[in-house]
Length: 465
Image (cartoon, rainbow, N blue to C red):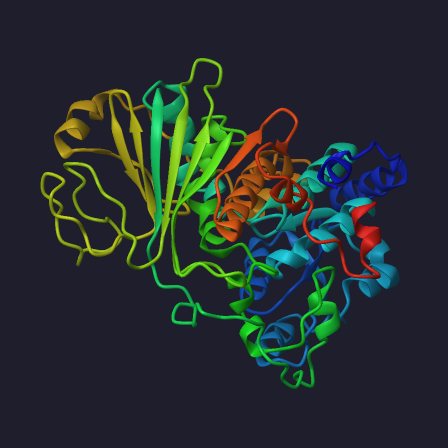
């Protein structure tokens, strides 16, 4: 099943590329703005919508959301009274597809794939929140679609890829400051909205009345159908294996993005769930420690990433770590013996000669301990300023003026790393992965899971575009 699902072919969709070319010519003329349709306009989707509007580079031509009657969507719709409104993205493309140059996708993780695949097949540029797909196969198919439609511009919403973190890491790597990295500790120890749920769960939540304004069928999309319950809605979807990717998929893209790209990690050959607290068959553990092993690449040594999440699962820190920069209330760590009770999301990077600590999103790295940082100060290269934020970078990419910094080809393998981590969490077992054949070699059941559960009836076509 997995091998069949991953054998994607080269379908000829030149008509879509012609549409992309027409779109390119359109945004080059008139006012030079990109006609943008925003799919998902509440909560995080609403933030994306407003960020795109702030750039001054987009005409918001359409708003699409499965719950247009909710307070948070109503507030955002009021800001764009001339935008056409839809509940179903398929209807939107059918009715006004010729008016749309690009789309933003700010919906739950499991719903990214159908929207992004349809948009690419229609020649529309695509901005999709991270992670770009929920399963290994979804990321594979999206990367393949982007390759087959080179005129379509893609961008994944890990915003730190357009901020200081990106440009510093790139400059330090090119200057040889970051080299010979052998280990990374990545941590997200903040509370999450589902903490406190009963981990002795033995069935899915009971059905509740569907809110009057919500189209629950479209919300569910290609995922296995579940009766409506508030525990799936308004962000809670992130905790369920059937809908989300947990803390790893949520925060990993903001913590590990530059490490993965500039150290050219690709895919791991082993994923091991070292510790899972509150493991069950339905939602993510309360705390997880997961070890990812990456082989040597070119002149770079083998590297282990150890992921820690959970409020009670704070990783060890090295001597001279200091405080967690984003929170002055965290006590100083002296000599590595005093362990902080809380760390802000971030990472510790261990190389042969230097140790770096960093935060999340756009936060920059610092060299530790402080004495070593002072010694290295004169050797550090200048870090370029970002020419555009992540949203402007996408729109300028649509206009042919910049290259996007987090296209599907860059982010896709990282999304697949997370999907492998989620599988190890769900099955609570070590996975051995062949990075050449992209198959799990020690567990046939896990290998079949690379493709995920077959799409719900009526949604199969999106996996064949």
